[in-house]
Image 1: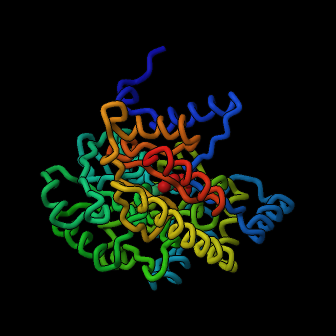
Image 2: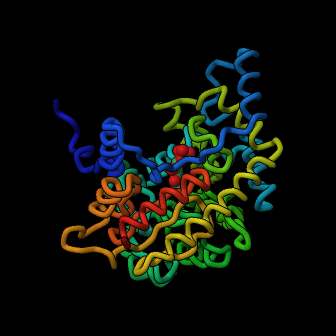
Image 3: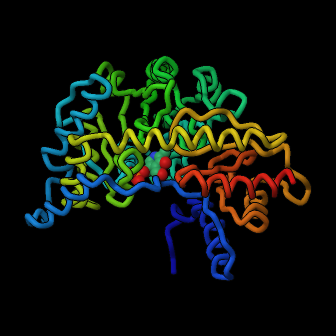
Length: 390
Ligand code: PLP
């Protein structure tokens, strides 16, 4: 079977090896705790589920407008007004099949063959592949644990070359949990503006920021410079709605039209029922979102306390998302020389699945998710601690 050359350049998901090994061990009867999950362990709030049921009962089950039903686009605009004081019309919004499709479509809409895209590393696994699928060239900009996994305008200056069309800025970050303050974000945006580099802001974890840190966004920057940034978000993480596939973007209406053109020729509208659920999520009560945030903040402290007690392990305090990304490279040996070998050892000896940092562009680290209940987290990390430090 002949598959395109373009696809042969795309790496398969590096997390698959670990999850298939975990499944194999489970099949042998071993108890495996997975700290590799990328989704909240909470159910979708009840009023959102009810709205979906109502949509089904009322027969709201047909094709809709490609960029989303008007009331949902209005609700998306309302999100940016409520949280960041940015007034935008619905024509500056689009609803996509998860945050993923927003990012994918923006890259398809913006890039010409060979255009370069700056990607701060550690990065979310899909960014380089998405850039390549849009015929672009990913250029990584490394950040390290010592500077809290954040890049600065100086780092960007060093990475910049002619031909850089865009950069991706993910805050709070998957995998590090690093969160840029509004000042830090604005400084990066000013740098991008000075170089005519378009910013793709991935803010999917913006509601999962832990006090005293406060949410930050490039939405206000978009208001000032609508041709220079697109702000992507979605309901998967903050509203515990991963399976519903609702993402959204705030962007210049021309870019929105371009994204809608791609959707119109590929996926069309997102699920009509999910759209009604999304309206309920964006316009309804947020007590459960607040409750989830409090739980994640507590677990962040719990997990960080355990991970940083392991000698030689360095882990900056994450201010958001639900991951820690410790640098475990001080523990590497000839027999366990990298993050993939470390995760294989953790799976075998501790019965805990984690994701190797190599998948995120940093082989010194491993990623643990804390989207699990407190007791399971403690049990899992005690086992990890015993396996790595004895
Ligand atoms: N961006 C980041 C940083 C993520 O971690 C994820 C999901 O893991 C997404 C985007 C995509 O989310 P979804 O497509 O489920 O809305």
